[in-house]
Length: 185
Picture 1 (cartoon, one colour):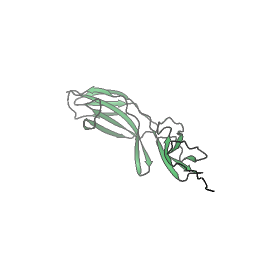
Picture 2: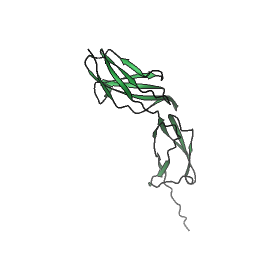
Picture 3: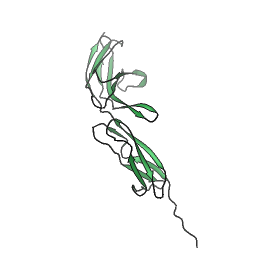
Picture 4: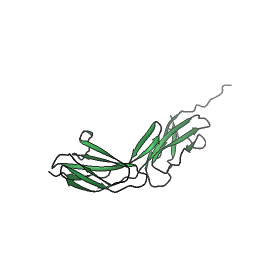
């Protein structure tokens, strides 16, 4: 008598409920959804287990390990990140062929800032300059040697240096709302 063998569809995707969070001092653990090639959801506990490899509280990149079991075998890894909290520009003042920008310090989980300024409110690469401010000591920067009587758009974001596979990385907050300034003659 012939024996009927059940075919098991291979795993197609591993998705996280969220791949990016903003730092708020609380533990973050996105849920994991695994589907096979037939779009059927696998059951956590029966078909796979999930382990979070580090305490995911601070700004950083965190790895999740999915260990398959039962009809499935193998280990897959996926990751998510916690970005530092952003900041805002407190004020901009015009200078001779330049400007001074001041911002609100972000003291927690921040290693520095990036200031972008451009003559376009769309901040295209060709017309945008970025200044890196390491550390968290000061909250102002003067930019000079610009064009006189020119309008500039300025925005800022925070960053955190983190260890990741392949070396050191920076993870960034979102950009602040831009401010404008017109340089003096």
